[in-house]
Image 1 (tube, rainbow, N blue to C red):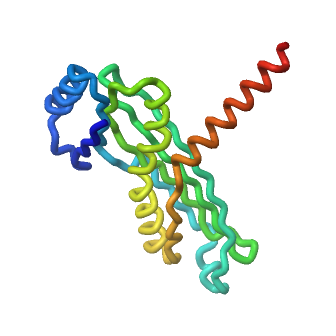
Image 2 (cartoon, rainbow, N blue to C red):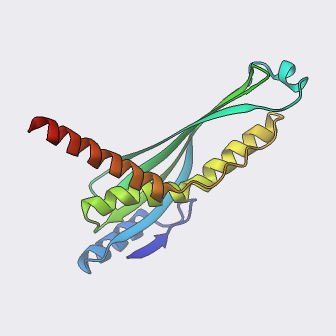
Length: 178
């Protein structure tokens, strides 16, 4: 398994990327490369800034995280998006809501379906996450709030937990039919 990281500014030509993929297919070796990282959505609202800034900052935060992926073409290009929505309240006043869609394009080929699903839901988000964390913190600083400094996320454990839940649900449904 070869990991080839492309430049986030698209310095590799499409021709070279497809050539790498074809070489990988010819040697029957799996290919995994990140082609580009980009911001799809960055929505920040702070409806009560003036009120919140006059209080002692001890926020309660909620964080919702979702991972989606889409096949872009038949050449093995996939878009993976991590969506995060953070809401912070301070003394029962909404301080801010911040929604971010951080995305990346990956070129992936030569993996069995199960391994492809794992790459899209574990390895890809692991690569994207530091960029998402930086986006969140930069916007919060510009808005006058302290950075969140999100802790690293174990996407591999999340993926395995999700798969175990699916298998348990399938087994339960199968048992109900008998």
